[in-house]
Length: 637
Image (cartoon, rainbow, N blue to C red; front, side, top):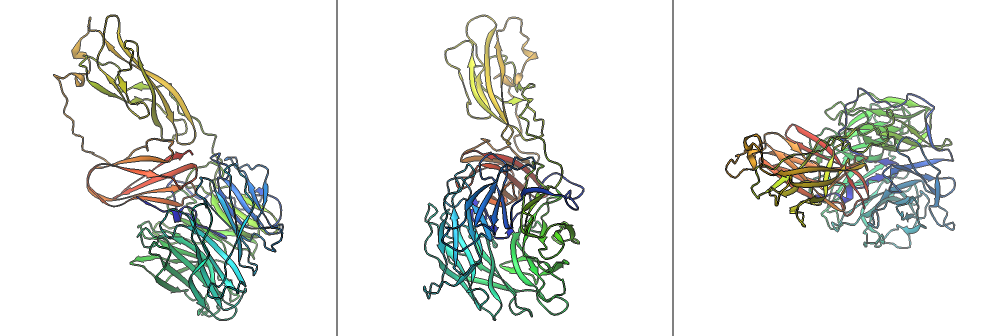
């Protein structure tokens, strides 16, 4: 299993990296075409936003960087598109002249709760970490600084962006910071701060430096992920502001799993028809064409005044190489914020980008199914800067809602489709044992599974046996408590009606709903019984030979579910095939790769350990040949 801890929270300042989750098929995007929108927080300017479950209730909340008052705001979501009273926490000490222009969220100290990293473009090189308590509160800021480690007295740095990911393979999320020296000057750096284990970071180490012309920004945005599939965290950094192509470059720093990056690949930004190069800004890692290679999606601004900003897609061609890039233009002058996620339920990642200096809030591009993008669709009414995607209305995968931070209009949510109904627990009224009568008795242990349990919402149901008793013996003469299948003995003592087993169980729907039920299994006495009318498979003289080879592709429910911290995922293959089995959070971010390679026909199982993840609902997805299936499970810490 390859756990992508560096992929757990790739929420770079002003750009949220989200992969697609297969969901139900929708005819089209259901975003509103214009205002009014849903107000998340009406106060102030919010240049940066993020979405995540801060209070552990299973619903996504909105985290806002409030530029005008130096605070980070946490707004609780109810899962139905409604929001509670915002809580505010200092982003920096009052003595530090810094404001939260960018935010990143992730579990920094690996305690199961989301934390916040925030930074300003001020020339102090400062950023801060605010630790979450799992109840929606943030602690006092802990301040760190980046500086020129070759000249420690030079602290005149602007922190442009940050990302969270494990780059040295110790399972702890490290910090990657991109910045430039003394605002618009010629030198930029990327730093790595290794996590000591409790959210305390080692001094910064410069892993990349770029010198450019005056007025350029050598280290504009950074993100982290495994681009070449070797299990090590790689860094992507964009450089911009050069008007004639010399300065606009996307650079990949390939990691070796020790926190160093010995190999780099640079890709010049393609020129526009007027011979200029757009300013490369935010960058997202996503498999845009579904072939298993990770591509780069870069949002860019027009710096030539021709309103030809847009999105540039660099497709991976394998072996640490990319194509020359394809640009999809917008009418925006400024495209600084972007996100990727499935907006219309076709399992393909779509692209959203903001237009902060125009009358349009943002534009989205639908994926054409092969990784290319269609024409942009513009959504008007807000001057949007911050951008995040997430399910805030329980409308399910493939209907991600859009959250935008604005100048002057607070933070707004654009709901994608109708809000889902409150979750209903499984229905156990039709529960029945797989074998109701153990006749004739042969003193053998027999597997009993629970059938007939349904879920009103269509969720996958997992059964857990909680107790087994019988009316004859002092001991249960059975086993299986804590598993999905009971084992009871086909035997009875004494006289009367025979032995009766009562099996108690709990049914889980993976969405926080559960129901309890019981079923009975009897071992009757032989008076008046017709042995030919009962289950011949229980008789030692009438054995049934079964072919146990799988005849179809199957992805089974994880067991146990809910789980803490590990669970087992089983799957069946009718023929040898290449298998990819991955885990995603509900924002579509890939958090673990469990299987990636050729597998033989038969039944397989893999253990998933979520030790470093926060509580919540996750999705696991299998690709095996042309077979694809997705299921949900719940981590409860």
